[in-house]
Each structure stands twice: as C-alpha cells, then as structure tokens.
Length: 116
Image 1 (cartoon, rainbow, N blue to C red):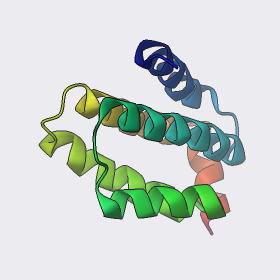
Image 2 (cartoon, helix red, strand yellow; image 1 turned 180 degrees about the vertical axis):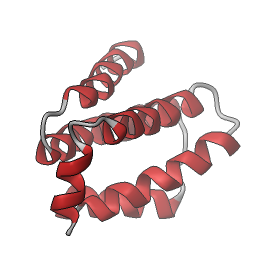
Image 3 (cartoon, rainbow, N blue to C red; image 1 turned 30 degrees about the horizontal axis):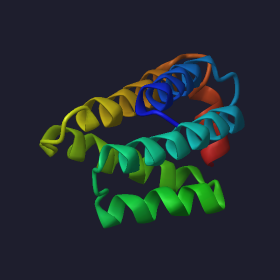
C-alpha cells in the first residue's frame, strides 16, 4: 500500500475517534488508529522508541485503558522531540484527538465511572 493511501486511512481513523459514544468504542477506534500508525511509521522509515512500542503492544493485546494513556503520554513527549519528517504530525494528531474526545462532556462522566 502506498504511503499516501495509508496516511489517508490513518487520518480518517484518527478523526473518527472523536465520534466515539462510549468508552469501549473509544478504545476500539484507538486500537484501529494505533495499528495504522505503526504501519505508517514503519513505511516512513521511523524507528519507534522501544518503550512506546511496548506500551502500544500492551494496549493492543490487553485493551486496557491504562496502557493507552501511558502510550499517549509518551507520544506527547516524542512528538515534540522527534526530528523526522511528518512523524511529529502523526503522533500529535493522535494525541490531540484522544485529548479532545476525553474532554468532551458526554464521555467524561462515563470514563470516570468506568475507571473506578
């Protein structure tokens, strides 16, 4: 698959995170986006930091929100420091969409209740 087509699929998947109506749907859409992100980073020639790869793998394997939030925090710091073309954009887009979705009023009470 060409990188442009993969990039378009990734952007669509990331922006669909905002449409999540429940926490489980948020996790599902996030995992789809992360799989596409990994493929996109691989095609770009970027070597993902090991800690980030481990957290993403843990999230994809277990589906636990704790690992997703750890990965998002790592992505936030890597997006600022990375000097690889377009990779900062890919990471920051994912982080921003997760943040926007979590701050929405319709998901905030549900997420807090499910976390307890």
